[in-house]
Length: 148
Image (cartoon, rainbow, N blue to C red; front, top):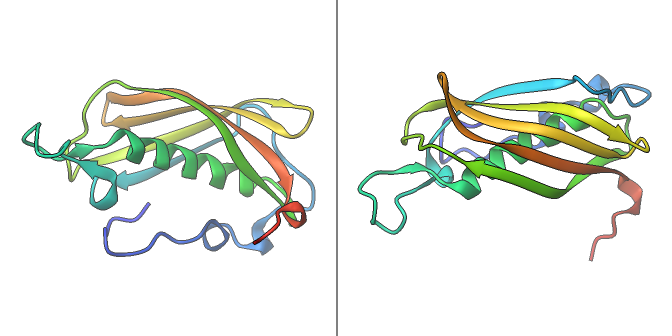
């Protein structure tokens, strides 16, 4: 994730070049991806000034969980395939202060019919759990996505 709030995040295609993608799907339970990010920029909230500090927002936490999971999926799918998220169920259990260096972990738990992917996701700050839950994604054919 970006450590500069003014810098745009690299696209998933820039993180995982087409040349690094497999010829066949390699999605299997147990696959895991861990990334680090700094709590800053669009990821923080002070809840309208009501809490006296800037912390990782729940939408920010969900965003890093989903992005990490999307990258993990993408790097294990062949060209022409991608994933879309369709369900997320998480608990935000502790605060991470602005400036904290956190980790996001995505672990593929189940593959159903070769296209429904179930993940365990978590965000930690050192040995403290910030958020935990599950996220589901669906494998799609990129050519089937219609642009308006």
